[in-house]
Image 1: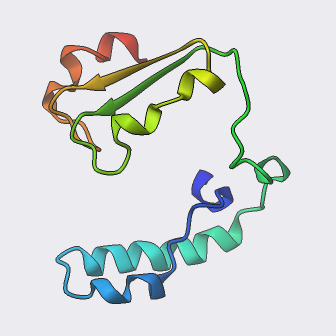
Image 2: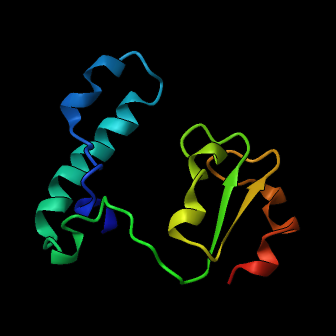
Length: 112
């Protein structure tokens, strides 16, 4: 799984202790416990070392995100064309981190 090789990914159960009052705490805790088990079973990729550094790529990139995404906000794409000169960003109006039934109206024909 991609998460296990990512240096930013830390889903340690102890990190959730301050969220015990949250309605999602039990679900998040079970997910964190699962990742703690699963990631130990997946071999680390040598390619993942240093992957937090962006490199220039001429591969075309089409990036979607939602205007209401609290995790990956459209402003996080600022400067992307410095690394991906053949990139385009599409900020989907009215969408958050997950898409809803309106997703098909625009990007569906563009994605397989």
